[in-house]
Amino acid sequence: MSFVTRFAPSPTGYLHLGHAFSALTAFDAAQAAGGRFLLRIEDIDQGRARPEFEAAIFEDLAWLGISWEEPVRRQSEHMADYAAPLQSLIARGLIYRCFRTRKEIAEAIASAPHGASEDRFRGEPLPADEEAAKLEAGDAFAWRLSLKKARSVLGPAYFTLVFEDETGLVRAEPEKHGDVVLARKDFDASYHLASVWDDALQGVTQVIRGEDLREAAHLHVLLQKLLDLPQPTYRHHRLILGDDGKRLAKRDQAATLRAMREAGQTPSDIRRLLGLQA
Ligand code: GLU
Image (cartoon, rainbow, N blue to C red; front, side):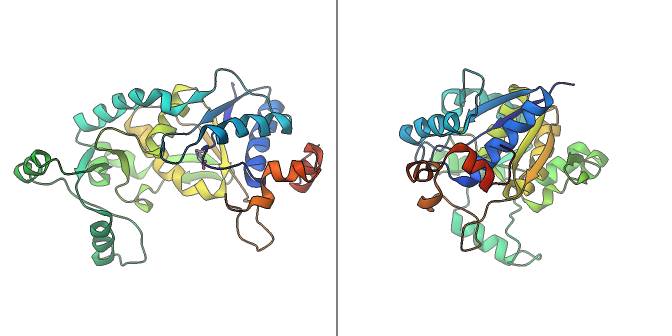
């Protein structure tokens, strides 16, 4: 069986130890399986992505001893690709235009019967005449996935959707997410859509990423089902914590690979620190 995995960083800051753990875990797994390792630049958020961070990703990964296949897929160069899945979802009524502002969404969540603690939103498309008036007025909107429609389209398959991760077979619970945004008004795809689409396009068979994205799998497998895409196997690894016990973030400068390199650490030191085999 073929084994294709990837590391998919967003160039919005310098890579830190947590990224190194993710990249090395995926790279080592591909090596061990005699498989392929891909690097994908997830730069759809053009407001935050910066070329110098992308250049630093290449440099830091090469320094770690990681090699990847060329060409690297840079999502910002393929924005038109995401129109096809969006059109297909629109045609089946699976996504709807949501004109609510962030504040209105927060209020809707707070007043929902499930209670304010659950950060998820469920909406409905507007009646056609109201929607037409808003479109006419040029109001902003987002395309949201309708879980209600997904349930009715898939029928019993919605409730028996499963995926495999390091814990075994997991029943997918897309409800954890509510009706997520899959694109903005002008078809700017969201992370969820772009990532799922690209994983399929690139033939990724194993998604290896941090624990922080465990919940995302519950939504991603639903998108795969709705878009008739193959389902990869998932593996979520532990997160690397800073001295304060919190997970590392882009602001933790001391843990960036470049800071560690400048402080004289070697790639083997990094592997040792992460508990990975040298
Ligand atoms: N681009 C995402 C991030 O930087 C990773 C997405 C993924 O691995 O699916 O967190």
